[in-house]
Length: 450
Ligand code: PMP
Image (tube, rainbow, N blue to C red; front, side, top):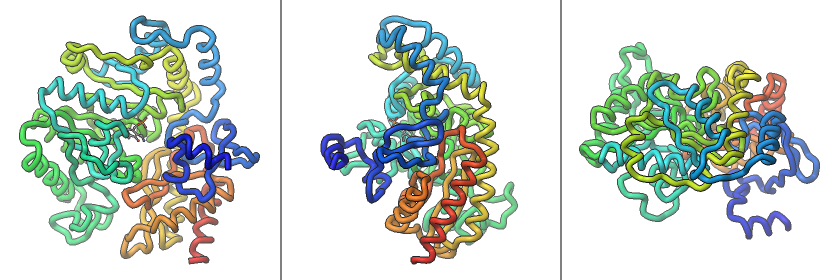
């Protein structure tokens, strides 16, 4: 009853809608990788509030930094500078390659992408933006135009000037077409071309070029891409795709924007930022989620040159860069370093990927296991040959079962067919093994009943 009342009063209580648990979870408290509901049941959190609580729930050092700042200063707005913002901006910039050294602080990822698009429009004098199909870049009226994942779009006209192109997906390939011109197979995994001679990227780049020809001739302001798609279902692009796409966009006069809202702050294990594994340096980087371990915050980082064209106008944000957010975000950066969280992400992530691959070989309904670090997707299919997405009822059934056994996972993909494993980055190998045992059991239960 309490839950129904909350859902009526607060449309943000989306538990039922997005995860579709039959009985919504009513969480009371959390510590590190664990959550407890109001009835005292404990869950291993393998989703971290959508890849956000990266240090762990109520992480002691981050909590201490917040408590200390709460007693000193909460808010000044952007009219004064304060030590936490100065300290934070310096620390953040030290994690980015040159020439990315100008920081604008926001309160969310949507706001960060809004601002990035505005910057790109002012800098280039152009208007249009291109994103990849299946992507999610925000829920504000403007970023909803950039978001192409239809699950999160409302049936109202999209914001003008936003176009999307085919998403190069190493598992599904070009939907409905062959992946490589020289081979009839659908995906890069099955393609027998030697990697350096495969034409897969050419197919995708042709698609991107087509958008330039048909929709945005010489009007491109920005190309947005997540280094690995998050809500889209942890979709990875073929090697060199992003590098080639950046080249093409820049030739046409646009800026390249890396949306690091999910992939930033060490989540992919091998690098601090997702774009680093594509061997590119974006013109603008946007970030949020893991930036402050669950405290609302976002940021846009760019070069002085781009910031200069933007600085002609006044950018005002009442809460962006407030002392509390900056102190928390500073403690997050310190913790990543001191507790070797990125390294843990790489080690536990590699273990998970290896063990999940064994489950893929065991179960007909696991089509693909992919990702990097603790940014992992398990794509579910009705059978390996057809690759038809496992229907939502089946996905929910499995999720419900893992929940009953004490493990929470996420879900994404354009058909909602991919389990998302994006836990707090502090999880141990033992936690991973507990998750694997529960997931194995839930799949087994489903197969027996199906
Ligand atoms: N970009 C990406 C890649 C995201 O995953 C999200 C949120 N899921 C956003 C932008 C928007 O962030 P927020 O919800 O903080 O506005």
